[in-house]
Image (cartoon, protein in one colour):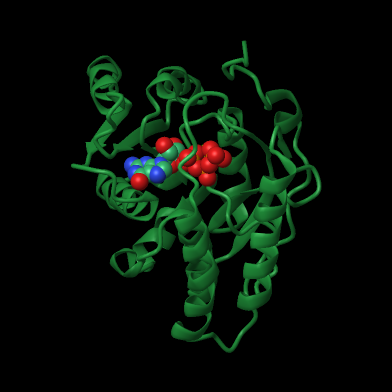
Length: 263
Ligand SMILES: Nc1nc2c(ncn2[C@@H]2O[C@H](COP(=O)(O)OP(=O)(O)OP(=O)(O)O)[C@@H](O)[C@H]2O)c(=O)[nH]1
Ligand SMILES: [Mg+2]
């Protein structure tokens, strides 16, 4: 039984060096796939070097920056070929606490897709300016309303899929990147009848490296939600959304442990 954590990277050299051991220490079943888009800061070369010493670390190189959505699609295909039972999405910038990975494994027992959620009881955001909070929460509300799905955090990028979900979804038809990609994957999983659950996470703003958030990514999401709503057939049954998990012990103890500090 193996679990694959897919981590897309673009200029995350300083982060991955610290993040990789923190992920692998969560258990022997955990493997990592770094999907690097030829980062100018040498993230890909560093990952390659680390992979020589660490058999549970794998690297996929792409020739240039091609967006988060296609990086994940490539990573998911790799994970299915690899034979992973569970496939995770996770950012490289320590916004997602590696100590939560075993909690996802626990929580996916009774469902097919687990979403790390900032907007269910016990979840939250640290160190984000008000503008960013409003944009994120507003974005989830907007998407939830238009798509009619009772999910509180649709734009997050810390999630865990059973392999059957990724086998069933048409990965080559997913064209969005950025936040829209996160919305699209969850929406498609719900349309296909998979059971989805949110679990509370504390999202911490990146300390090192630069954000790839842009006006283009934002606008893509605004438009993509409408396109998703009207281009994909709706099922005649309710969506299988489970009640969110209760705040976990691991969350309280684990948040922030091992992150790089501001100093
Ligand atoms: N391979 C690849 N990775 C990307 C690309 N764009 C973003 N990433 C990675 O995707 C993850 C999320 O990107 P971030 O820049 O942190 O985006 P964000 O979390 O929405 O923004 P911040 O909250 O400001 O950090 C990070 O690990 C990035 O390095 C891309 O085009 N290709
Ligand atoms: Mg980030």
